[in-house]
Structures are given as C-alpha cells and as structure tokens.
View: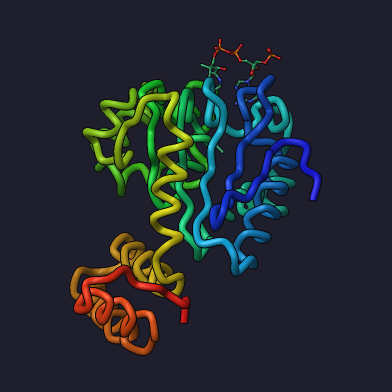
Length: 257
Ligand code: CAA
C-alpha cells in the first residue's frame, strides 16, 4: 500500500512505521492519522508481525495535531464527527507498539507516544503539552495519560504552562522507559521489539492486557484479573514449551499456540 505521510516497512517480525511530514515537523493531519490507522490494521492482521515500532525523524517525533488544518474548524462539525476519536487507533492495538522518540513530541505528538506501550527516548527528546499556549487543551488523552504516568503535579504544570520536559526529566518522571543516544534510537527500539517478537505472541498479548488493566481498575480487581490470565497461560502449548525448555537448559521454541 502506498502512503503519503508515513513510511512503513517490515523487519523480520517487526512492523516499523515512520511518521514522515518533515516540513510540518510531523504534525498529525487527518490523512496521516488515517494512514497510520491503516498501517496498524495491516500489522495487527499479519501473523508474521509480533511487535510494532512507531518513530518520527531526528527533529520531531511529532509537533502536535496539525494546527493549520484545525484552526478554522467549528464546534458543531468537530462534535458531530467526534474529531480526534480515530486518532486513538494506537491505543486499541492488541500487539505491542513501542514509541521511539527523538526531538519534539508535543501536544498530539506526546499523546501519540503515550498511547504506545512504552517510550524509548533519544537524548534529544522533548515532551510537552503546549495546547494551552494556543488557546486549547490536549484532545487525545494528554490530560489523562500524562497524569497517570507522571502524577498530578507535573502533569498539571505541563498542561497549564506548556513547559517542555527534556529526556532526562521524562525518564526521572517515569514517562519514558529509558534514554538512548539519538543515533542509536531506532536500532535500540528494533532490538527491544525483536526481543518481544521472539516471545509467545498470545502470552505477550496477555501480559500487555494485564499491565494495561493496572491503569483502569482497583488493585484487588487488577490482581484477580492478572491471576486469571496467569492461569490461562497454562492453556497454551507455549507455556509447556517455555517451562520445559528452562528445565532442559535450552532455548524455547514458541509456536504461538
Ligand atoms: N501544526 C502545523 N504545523 C506545524 C506544527 C503543528 N503542530 N508544528 C510545527 N509546524 C510547522 C510550522 O508551522 C513550520 O511550518 P512553515 O515552515 O510552513 O512555517 C514548520 O512546521 C517548522 O516549524 P517552526 O518553524 O515553528 O520550527 P521551530 O524549530 O522554530 O519550532 C516548535 C519548533 C517549537 C515545535 C514549533 O514548531 C511549535 O511550537 N509547534 C507547535 C507545537 C504545538 O503547539 N503543538 C500542539 C498542537 S495542538 C494539539 O496537539 C491538540 C491535541 O491535543 C490534539
């Protein structure tokens, strides 16, 4: 499939998606987000793919929703079409998606990164929710996901002042899993994706579902849900293979069954 605003490639069992609107610092226009959703649909449906990586350029992961495209839009239309609802596609992926962020991840760009399962940051990364500076507020989960990830105080400061965080502050705050040199960002993300893609695919889905439930439910419910999923892993051949490989001191050979 030919895309205009993203580049898509398959590397082994990994689907790599690169946002590619350099002149607009990868601002999220409607067409780009429809392309991103289509690429994710394709990778989700492909049994060969075990993990996806979403990245941008050295200068910007994405500098936000496209301000020029939305500046003159009117409330009745935004409301009727539920504008931005379709921009949430990453958050509904069942397979893991890693965000590899260099440069600006602002507004919708920061929100898109937070929809991914974890964020690897280049030492050049800058995160922010500057919508307040242009007379609006985050619209694809910024106030919700940032607050859950870094806590109320820092999320509130960022959403009310528009201040950016650099990679080190983002790592300290728990927004990113780790920082890597910019030149190694995509390779490191591919390495992590490769490690995930080598695991049993259905068990990876369960692990992701269990971690995500921590953000949605009480501790007691979450622990119960986790235990039920743990029990369910024993319905898979891969659990038997994984544990017998450990006992036999060999590498497991997962069949994704
Ligand atoms: N939308 C549309 N175009 C954008 C853009 C955006 N979010 N961000 C940057 N661009 C464009 C600029 O207009 C400029 O285009 P022209 O060359 O045609 O003028 C080009 O990208 C390069 O940008 P700058 O010249 O501004 O580059 P800079 O290095 O001086 O500054 C920046 C970089 C600090 C990221 C600055 O571009 C900036 O502040 N961008 C806007 C950030 C922002 O407010 N994002 C939030 C958007 S609203 C949102 O995302 C709502 C939501 O939650 C869904």
